[in-house]
Image (spheres, rainbow, N blue to C red):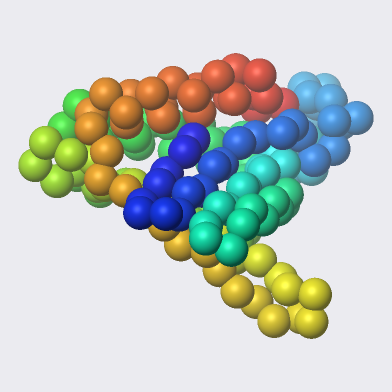
Length: 147
């Protein structure tokens, strides 16, 4: 998922499960949170260069919800989505505005000296690009489904 504005760009991708060794546990019908954390890779590019971060800040169920909400906004069934992910390091907002879809991402990261900073970016995209974003996120979910 690529969002860009002026000379800034943020790329969000899913690199895999945080704990790939965990398997789906259907024996006790218990949900295993550790099995469902996803490693998210954030690449932020601006005039100062490129910074890459990886954080397990998204669960498979949250990814599924994000995809569903994007599709509802594209179809006009919803006008706004604001993420409420368990981990506060990644926030995503999506809204319908006339013939555009507004997409905003904020990623909070820890600097080497213990100071928290964030990168924020937003873009007004066409419906076609919003569909591409939803399709890309769907491919990540198919590759790393709920376990």
